[in-house]
Length: 206
Image (cartoon, rainbow, N blue to C red; front, side):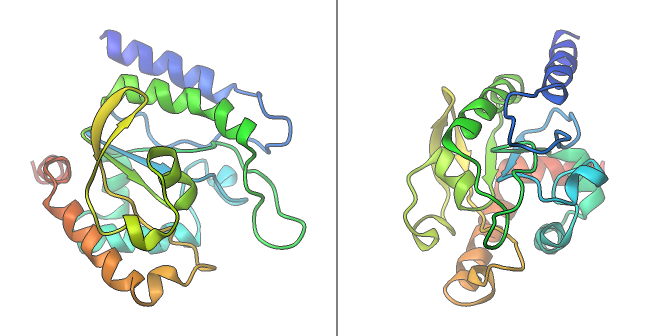
């Protein structure tokens, strides 16, 4: 099929990308599944490259517990949802603390991969995880203003739904205290009710 051929070509180009000299490879991306849902993370951490998959460490454990509560375990999620990111390589450590935030140029370089995936998948639903990912789709000053709501967005000339999620990092307290706790539950409830999520559940159970 043409779509599968295009996906194969896209993945070959993606995994050979060396546009950003400060980024630390390898390129990390989820399974090349044709899914109604596109998850967009921020950037892989220092462990993900070794595992060869996004959200493979502590933040992932937290996030996949959220999804398991609404019906899908980690292994099935990885098989049913296309997992992308704002940037696909590890940005390196910040000299003071945490991981370095990718530069505007690095984000722009990687945006072409997201655009290609939007064109290939034409997702019914996007799940941006964390403020950097959310800000690619919509204006966000505070997480409280956007999480817990269903948004209609136009992303790379594709109109679709978006349900933003907080970053599940252990360093963040937002999702573990109010109002984050309640807003996260609202977001997960919206996700559980969304037609695209129901399709994933049906695939799982069929």
